[in-house]
Length: 595
Figure 1 (cartoon, rainbow, N blue to C red):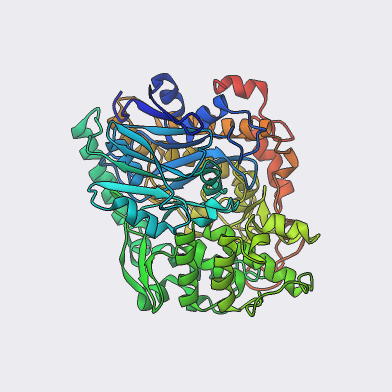
Figure 2 (cartoon, rainbow, N blue to C red):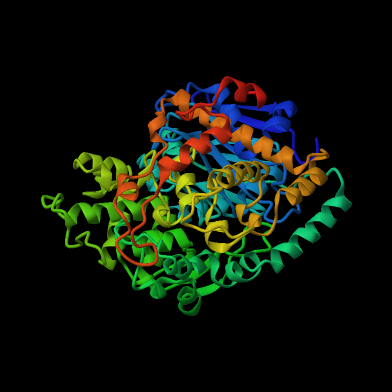
């Protein structure tokens, strides 16, 4: 089958065994690859009720059929497992080059089972696969561990966890190529629970294409559309994702001081424009990327990849901090120690509000008080959180568990215990609906309604209106599930539509799918994820937003007086999905989707 390598690695760390299995092409056709196929394999092979940090959980590193091909941004891969942070399905996406390299080694994915007796790493060099001792890199930061594993090797990429994953922080990330992150849902803790420090991949094979000439033609067309688009051809290449700081702030939806406000008065100080002017060294694109939104920055203290928009927001506006140098440094420590920047910054912000209400008066802040606006605190406590030191140990499992401990779970700005990113739902009704219904919790990239509601792509929707928001949200969620499954970057959807994705997919794989076919595949994947969550015990009432966003009107700015009207949107959304009034897929819908 074209686009696939036809092989999966199954590695059991308990048994110290390695098996090569043939890819089930019927399953691949139905669930595509990446997010879709990874979810299907996980659902079939584990009990969704297990402890996510137990040896019974599995962690799957999986490509899509377009990963490693000449298609635009064809280098994405997914990490699929049960989340220790939320208890939901976790499917975290990452770029860089590691995913493509796994394809070049001859594999569509790796299924890791069990738990090693002591720290190990996996070494893959085409058909040579070994489980090796990792005592010499256990405890080391991501950058140092990567350098050690890459010594004297060419065409090699490294995926690794940092100390946060080793110490089972529920906001731990998995890093690849040093500063690319499968960041959300605590997937790094699952690797740590298995005593798996890293996976190093070397490969030089090629991915077969169904119609090379057609691929070239469609790629040429897609590249042109990406370059001609104002977001992917101008804004993102020039200023990275942080181009959004001023845009989102101008709409009054830049969450400030733990979502207490929607306007940050110092937004210009932390904007993408300021980042480019003062700290940008170069663009840092992922594999086969024509957009180049990645940033490589330098301050007097640190140098490396990032920060992204959500990172700048989390450590900046959400914590009331306007010092961009310290935000860059906090991002660097997140990459080195291996924690999710969104959850880490948002957890610090929640701690700041707890402190402001007198609930942390007994805490020793070691001379670095967690007060809104304290730019020193964001760096100091990021390191403490990732290393589980002092009060950092209480924050290491995310804001929900922290706030719940102090009797104020309502101060955790989370959905299903996953921290909401940098868009206040009170001013973007569709994005808020996506947050509430996202299968992995508070996630913006499961259905990026900011595109039509703020950026006007592919059409402009009034951000405060409810009309048509459920149908748009469903379409965006289904299309995103397909994009995540084929191995391309979501940012291509600013310039490309379902028809273009169908053309590119067909030319690589050899199918004759239409735009409707790919949306149906996306719906199947999204519904399967919902089924996993239901089986895992995620309650219907968890399709909601923090009470503050539903009941407390925005106090000032362009969104003043607004709340999110979720109760008016959910019934229509569930009906469109073929789910019952509680959000449970009906038998008829499951049969229609072949589930």
